[in-house]
Length: 373
Image (cartoon, rainbow, N blue to C red; front, side, top):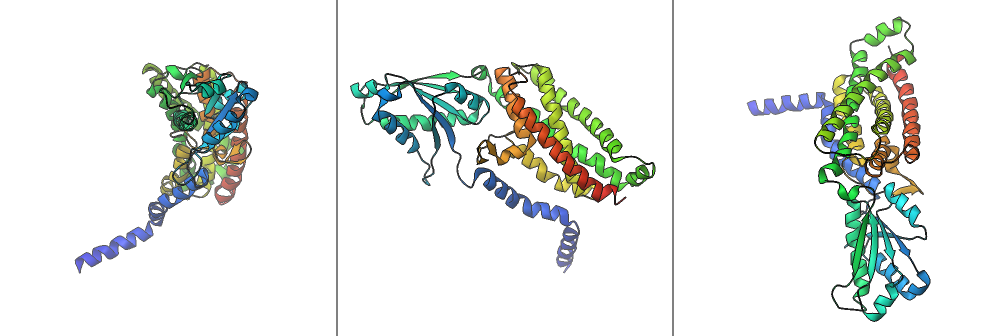
């Protein structure tokens, strides 16, 4: 009987703390749904651009190679490679820099002659060694090449290929490959700090006193935004300096890095405003805040690479998350020494998303807390 009383009491307390209960039972199903939406419910497809130096001389062998590459599939029959024939290697290399393509396969003029004579054809491969998708995409590409060459020759080696890594990606250590994601993560963590500073003014009724003082919405939001921006810069600076001390190197300007991070910090503060609009206490912020925190952390590419399943040409679901563009911009700066013109698209997207999220956050926050006060 005593045990039943304990069970009854525990159930009542659990139901009373329904937000924690909701997080516990819904978190995993929620992220299953989000991951399904991000990946279109399938397996990762690797983008390979193929360039034939002499497409006319390659003749039928060209079609055979493309068909073999397209024939590399997962066990469920889904293609592992998204093959694009290109005549512009410069454009393909730019897509690799933008993380919108993974491998550039260059087929030399002597390709068809090698197959006819039964000798090993040579290939040239371009990619970014710091992109995990490059290595896997290259493995699947080699599988398709082998399937074709075996039809003409059983001699070893079946093929030869040279890799040309872009930027300074070849010289990067494993530590340097993964540290940039932590830089972005240090900014994403600001979502909790920024949310709490807003919600505490609601909890302790400071919002009411500030409203009586004829404070404007602009004054309130700008003051808190500047403080949180400073916190974010300090957090990032500490992370960046420690990484440099431990051996991290960057090819680009530290001031450009700070510019990207500054805009990203503002976007996170804007998302915090939206979060706070749906919360009434710090406890709710700590519970509900886990959802946007994990979405930004895992689905922006900050911690793990994700496939780009584009809704329309050039735009994927991931692009709705500001850190997605910060990851690409920082990678260009660190790996290629990019200048401001090279990351203009990423900066523009960061600014647009920041303004959109701020507009939504201000409207929701004003309606739920300022007007309510």
